[in-house]
Figure (tube, rainbow, N blue to C red):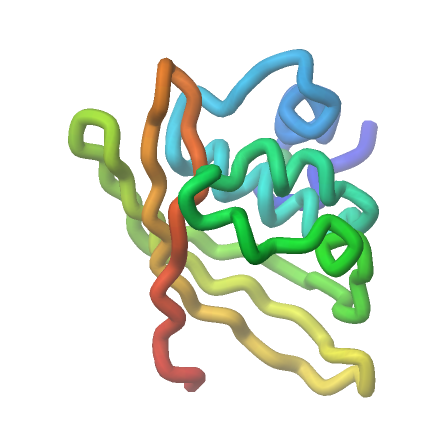
Length: 130
Ligand SMILES: [Zn+2]
């Protein structure tokens, strides 16, 4: 058994894999953020990132850039999540090493919106780096 790359301590086949392969969709804001982290960490998952990006904020995003992964993602920690109707927020810290191997942390509060039953990433507020 392989643990999921999203750091959930669950098996990949029952965690993010069904989301990344498109067999199921995220039911909660946490699932969406986890699976998008997994997509970044795995690399080459631009399609999934584009599909889960809200069209209103995805226009400047280029799939080729999403497929280039120069970071090594080490862990995901979800600090806080909430959902009100069709909007949600997830605050998380994603730890990674940059292309020079220097450890860094990305601290973000993501805003998510549900449209026709599916969750999308709207945008994120990046907190000051610790
Ligand atoms: Zn996962």
